[in-house]
Length: 304
Image (cartoon, rainbow, N blue to C red; front, top):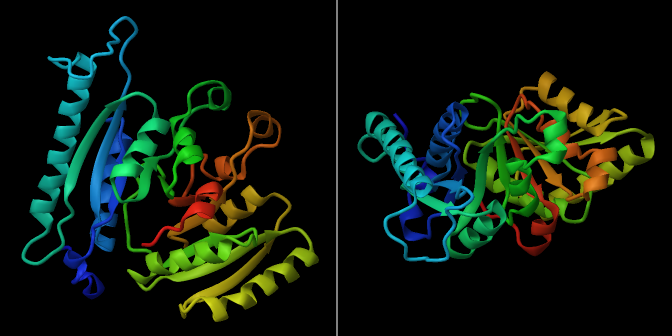
């Protein structure tokens, strides 16, 4: 039985935040929906289940008040309704009495992911988006539409990528991979709010290749006590030439529940020849990954 934590009892007096969950109605999308439901219960948030559909060539229309709906739109609305009903049924079976019950809404929209993200951010108090890992091969990763990276590159809120068939457990250890940028102290402050729901430890980590970087990390870590009031923050440095490999090894050998990274948006050629660290670690991830967009962090900071 899910029970609302004591620090969430007064949530009814504040604006509820919303977790945006993208779905394509695949088997993995069902698991992502279940993960999001448990996560929402844990932090006291609502859920907006979203599907973006494309109109087949030749069926486009400029009539915004068209009726009846196009078949692709009707399918999206109906399939979303079935998935919402399934999640609500799980709530009915598992939550009783005063247990927290997230509101679950749905949203179907034609068009591109970038426009949808901007529109939803403007009308909803979106806390973060949850999506499934991208499974494209190396060729299509660069030359076909990669919906995961369309979201990560353009979202003005954090994006959580869930491994295949992952099941939610309350976070006990959150690893924050920092490059020691000036915005990272703010991100760490944001993470203390998330960690507080389950009294999780935050492991501030840096993948370093030389002693100078390690000394800079120690200086960064020494700033924390004066700026952040959270008792369970520890420091860990790993010597590794490749940052992505270092983070994957960290996730594999330490019982991390959530890996947090900051994403720098790169050009096509940078991605092609150098590769994105974030893309590498989200290729078949072993643990959920929470991605903060660097440009979004400069504008606003997520409050969990």
